[in-house]
Image 1 (tube, rainbow, N blue to C red):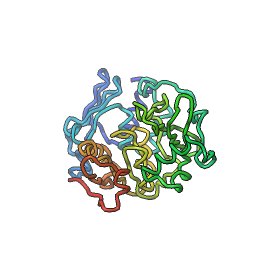
Image 2 (image 1 turned 135 degrees about the vertical axis):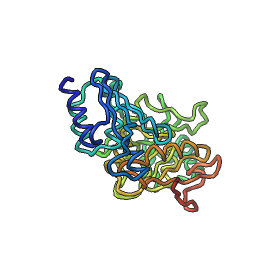
Image 3 (image 1 turned 180 degrees about the vertical axis):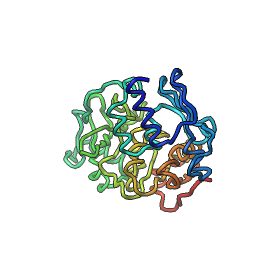
Image 4 (image 1 turned 60 degrees about the horizontal axis):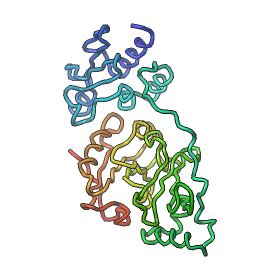
Length: 305
């Protein structure tokens, strides 16, 4: 084994325990699965079966017992997000060889459209302003929300006729935006060419000491405090790691009513390690989302068996 591989194996042993089998020529090593042994069966020393198989030549892992039900499979980096301490992850991020790192395209810094007009600074007598503000009012978005989330709109350019919903990172810098049509474009949404899995939407406004809500779309965010739109039906490794490291409260999944199976799958994915027993699910009415209901005041979070 080279030095990088020895370091990887040493880190894995540090938080997974003694390996049950190791074949250096194949790059294959097996451990007791923390999910099977600790979280499901409640065993401190593991079950001795070595179901968690890692191939460090290919950079992947899988538990042969619970991979499908508990999402214990995937890229090797996921192991560090799922079970390792922050100190292990920092060490791995600093020294992991290139072949173990996710291959991501380099994108330029994201900025709001040049044509972006803040609602708070707009000329309220113009027709485009009235069209845009009327669209928001129809969706029950009030002035406080418009101000809090720095909403704007465009009247020309690539994003002409769209509401601009910015997102800011934990340093207050723009990290993404969603552009939603208010004049009946064929495509309702036109978002920037930037990978969504590299950002946490609404990160600057999240209080990690409280319960964090995961919602599907940006308009849902306006009706639940401390919520993160995941812009889809699953979470990125970046968001997963942030939840694991920073969230002190519960994580409450609140996807659209037609995505119950996806919500349950996400529940299983997150419910492990330090997050075990801290995941909750809100079952939305069929074909309804948070924004359409105007909130979740009448719905109680549940746990899954």
